[in-house]
Image (cartoon, rainbow, N blue to C red):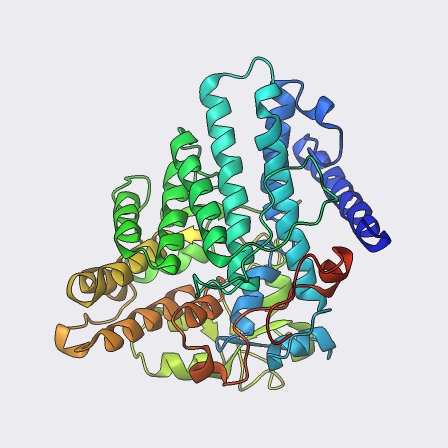
Length: 459
């Protein structure tokens, strides 16, 4: 392995050690990456600490702590960027991302950090003495979920996930035995099969509902339903979505109360929500709102005027109130700011990995025009809109567009829009013929692996 890779791995371990040193002060835990396996996995307490450390990696600023979902929105038509003229941020706005972009590079590293941590638990859990069988199984299921989530998020952002025949999948890492060994990219289909296998294992292992801030069997089923939808397995997607919808732990909010999803914590709509606090804030407010009188230069990720135009075509949609184009500095207009991540005093905004509303929309899409309209209307009615009649969506294309519109209204600024356009083949018509549907593999990964990891076409 060359010097670049060695330096990269040293930097990775140092960054993890620093991150978990701060985490240790708050949670009283050690990261499985900060100390040796022999020390972490020698007791039940060590295993539990590793589990919390794994959740902490998901909260990284570059992952579900802020940047990953927001990049997905602001590279697409829901958002744009502000900031202080940083080239890497402007490239997101202009959809001209370079291979050395600091944001996509940070995301790539952060996701593999989470996978690495999950693999540490998966590879060492059998060595832990004295752990009860149910707890061991549940922690293993959580780790399998985290690995699958990371794999899928990598595939969506850096792989040709819409084409099962493509060679441009992800580098599948399932062990920490040879951390310096470069791993070539698998095909998209092989990547999907790895993700599906991991999630099926997670569903089988998870046995305890510990609250919406922790991974549960229903969370694994919900994520697997999402994966099957992307993969084109509509029957499996609908069946799994139905199982989650039937879980009495979750419920849709009705009427105006649904906006409290973004001000309260762990509401019944959350299937898996990463909960932050004063000592461990997320970056969402800092990146999307900052303060009432913020200037354009203060806010990195803005709501685009195109999203405003979209909501103008949907009178009565209560979700329009979650995007503000009026109470903003004139330097921000005609763009605006999402209101989903207010709380500028505490800055402890949650990250929503999956919500029940999305599961309804997954089933609506998977069931198709004849059978899915009821689910689509369930969401519409709950957000203030009239039901669609069959005559309103006379063709399958009309129905697909109606589902995508509902997903845009419901899930904007939660990390779905670019992926929805890519998987349905609508990037060119929506964003421009020259726009690439995925990000480049970071150049330092190409260089550090001696070109074992190959670049995406067009970059």
